[in-house]
Length: 77
Image 1 (cartoon, rainbow, N blue to C red):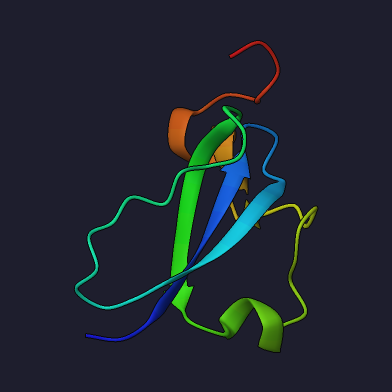
Image 2: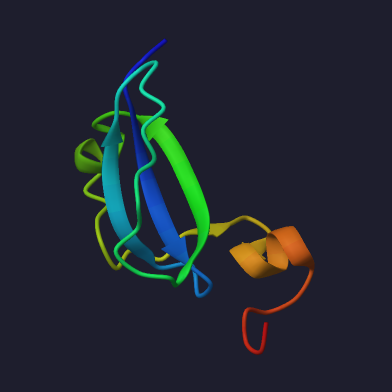
C-alpha cells in the first residue's frame, strides 16, 4: 500500500490532469474534463521527479496510446 499519483490522459496522449491518491481511500477523483481516455498510475511524486506535467504526451515503444491499445491512430475514434 503506497501513495500513488494518477495522470488523466486525453485520446491524443496528452496529460490533462495529475492527482495525488491516498492508500485505501476509495473516494472518486472526478476529472475536470470529460476528455479523459486513459489513466496512468505511478508512485506519488514520480511525475514531478521526472519533470512530467500537464501537456506532456505519453507514448509507448509501439506508438501512440491508441495505436498501442487499439491498433489504430487516435484520429477519428
